[in-house]
Amino acid sequence: MRVMIKQGLRVSQMLALLLAMVWATAQAQGLPDFVPLVERYSPAVVNISTTRNVAADLPQGHPPLGMLPEGLPEDGPFGDLLRRFFGEGGGGMPPQGRDSTSLGSGFIISADGYVVTNHHVIADADEIQVRLSDRRTYDAELVGSDPSTDVALLRIQADNLPVLRLGDSSDLKVGEWVLAIGSPFGFDHSVTAGIVSAKGRSLPSENYVPFIQTDVAINPGNSGGPLFNLQGEVVGINSQIFSRTGGFMGLSFAIPIEVAADVVAQLKETGSVDRGWLGVIIQEVTRELAESFGMDRPSGALVARVLPDSPAEKAGIQAGDVIMKFNGEEVPRSSALPPIVGRSPIGQVAQVDVLRDGEAQTIGVRIEALPDDSPVARAQPQPPKAEPTQVGALGMTLQPVPDQRREQLELPEGGVLVAALESGIASRAGIRRGDILLMVNNQALESPQQASDVLTKLPAGRTARVLVQRSRGPVWLALEIPE
Image (cartoon, rainbow, N blue to C red; front, side, top):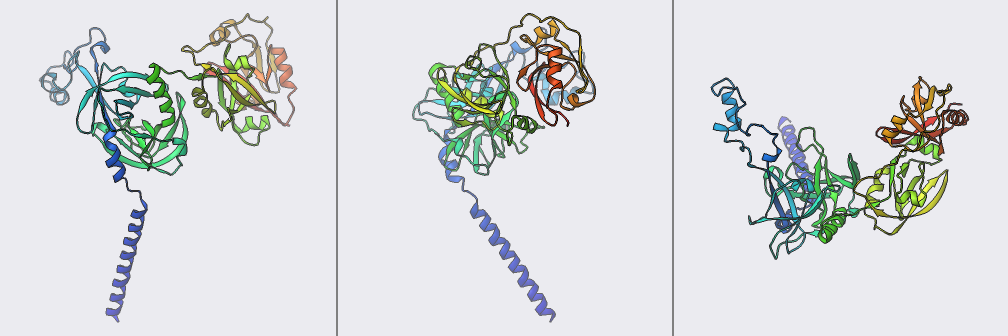
């Protein structure tokens, strides 16, 4: 009996092991084979190194880099430690005036030597070198670069080079496999793979790029390298990582290739980039604001301010409008609008669908080129001063906007200053002491008394929209009036 039990256990263990092997084999067979893609396309991925003279970056009187700090004896307790970092005599660090070197990646888009990389890879470089997979090295000419999209175009004097095919990132699906080739930490032609985590990501200070987010391992040195789909097409340029340590943490971002291709075409033709300009400051539509507009869900881009003498002002777009579509393209959230406008043809009339006071309208706007210096509103004469006015039900005390504050914010006429604020309805809506109230439900506020009249007549049980001007810019807040 014991023998039979032991044999039965062995059979069960063997079956379990067999099932595990079958499952693992099935899983492995379900994974894509990246080998043909890497073998075919990696020769068109290049390593980019730049040099920059650091002498100009040192303050006047700064000691040469690599020297021990003045007053610290070489035979002191820190001498050995510093020599391990700097080398004997400071030889491990470049002396003042020697070049600083950085590394990045790029890829060839034409057989006659055009190479694409990131702007930040070559920014402020005095010399740029491109090294191919066969170790040939060329001095590169900077054709042009665009900091706003972080795209740069280089040219090397070579012919019959391997070239990558450009795809379309709009065809990418979240969860789809993608692959990156680059030079992380200077290790040439390193290959990493992962999936698309999200699309259309907006990052701080990046207004014109709807990034592709992936979990592909991207590290310093991968910047400027290609992101491939399984068909071997370039769908993005690896640009940024999200990290608290400087290394990969599972979040990386790539510039969609169609955004980069438009920039590259302009750089190739003129050496610079023009992008469309609408001339509005926008914000997200929150759930509370959507309710005040009568929308069933938050969507679109809410106009907080229309810049003077801008295409939007000339066309009649107003603060409080919600831009729902631009040239027929949906605007699901505010971050989607700048990239759409930026790649719009300059001089053509765009059809902008807006929601204004609960009604849909279509406005034709002739798109202009984004100016180098953002235009600002000019301060207008200060309206006559009045005594502070209390809006007791809302917990606010209002007064005219001081001249100095108005000039500081470059505000035209109108608006009222929140001089004092108590705990209550206004504070719960996010209004702060020092805010300037510009509009309520698209009605301009011109004086403390007029503003008080407008605010006290708001219907109970409804949500009102309040446009507030702050140092960082205008913002709409939702003011819920209790029943």
